Amino acid sequence: MAIVGFEFTKINVQRQEVAKGKINISNNVGITDIKKSDLQLGKSKQNGIRFFFEYRSSYEPGFAKIELGGIILYLTDEKNAKEITEAWEKEKKIKKDVAEKIINAILTKCNIQSIILSNTVNLPPPVPMPHVNVATGPKQEPAKEGKREEKKEDRKERQESLKK
Image (cartoon, rainbow, N blue to C red):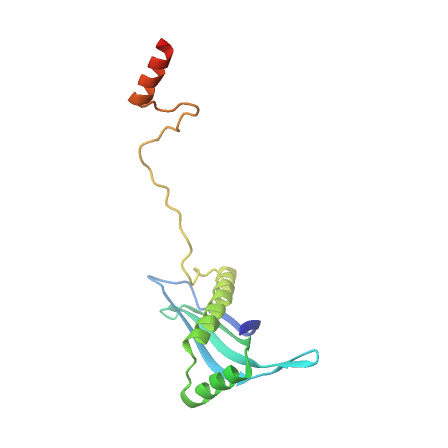
């Protein structure tokens, strides 16, 4: 049970005009379809499933959008492949453990691609970027090497040994 393939089939980014006021960015990802897709690896056949997905970043109010679509190829055993495809055909649902792997893989690739695309057309990144805050406070002096604090007992022992 592993993800062995990922490809984009749709990449679209649009920016309407200069933004005025506050911009709200919302991201959405969803599985649009699932199909059984076996792979031929040498003489052996592997059971696979193709997950079709869409990813959207919307810059509101109507300022811009990023749309990505693609396919993830997931290898699994025959029993699991049948369960996944049947559940999708009946209820449009995916088992929790499989959905978690697939959606995390989609988000990893799509977040990176959407940051690149937003930068290309001068949009703010659709996902929060890390920030560093340097705290200002009292300056601490570095510890002095080679010196250690001597306890009273250690001092007494040393003094007594010197007397002898």
